[in-house]
Image (cartoon, rainbow, N blue to C red; front, side, top):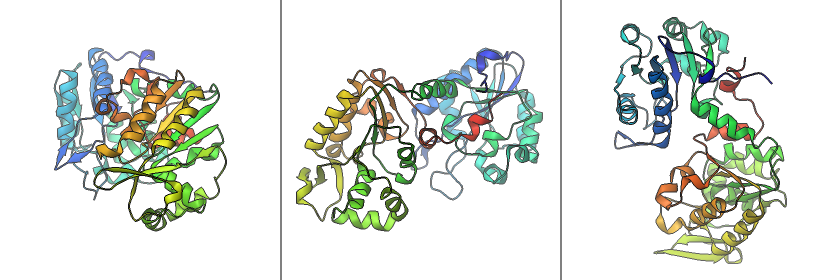
Length: 389
């Protein structure tokens, strides 16, 4: 296997270092929300600053046209809070202003360039070598000595700032290193291996199930609804949403049905408070919003026998306190299982503090969502491939 170099393999004093991070965050009423990703990436940046590097940070926020698409000024302030030193925001990515500010940068200082997705070439369909020839990547490459990819969570995307710096020595940042080290432990996992699979975005989360690596898949959320409908169950109101919004995923699910994929036997819905019904009481003219008590106990029994457990999503609509029961009980069961436990990106990992569950009870909490799913599906990640020597 090709070797991936890390920060430990290179000296940084006096060097200008381009660092790609992923601090894409929720935006509420125009305010960028703090997140575990920002805190984690701040550690990598601070370490490079302490080594005497001049750190040039690349990141994105949302996509052009989306509500959460904005510049990176607020992100710079949040990074500064965690680093304890100023991270200067530059309202440019590779133009004259950006180049001027990069050249002013001294050892031990850092700046954050503007949203890389404001650059047309960032998300074009090009090969790494073709990205390297764009004015965008060529300009930034000329201003740096080293490229550090610390953004495992966007490394499933072959985008310019992730794969384009082929003309620079490249190493993995601390988050990238930790993600890859933890994921290596599930290449030859201790069995049985269980995948707790819930939440939304089923089109992504179904990919790993085709790999056949899991002994059990415990479903919740939209994923559970898909499998129930594919098995011929009429849920009621939820059927309409699934059949209109997730047609492609429903078709994919029909080819994945097997005995090791477990679906709920009871459910919770909001009826002026939490109310539960069994599967035999369906259909119902209400949105199903959580797994029920019997399902929780069945899932907990499987979890207690598992040796490797991955959590990829929530069991219900955790934004509603009355619908957090399934997720909280399943997460507590995973935490107490004694197995190697890995939580994927998303609500499950980010809500541990709110749920009163200690993060250190899990073997690893990944900051990745789509990249983790792609890895579990056995697909190569372009950003990781670009780091191989």
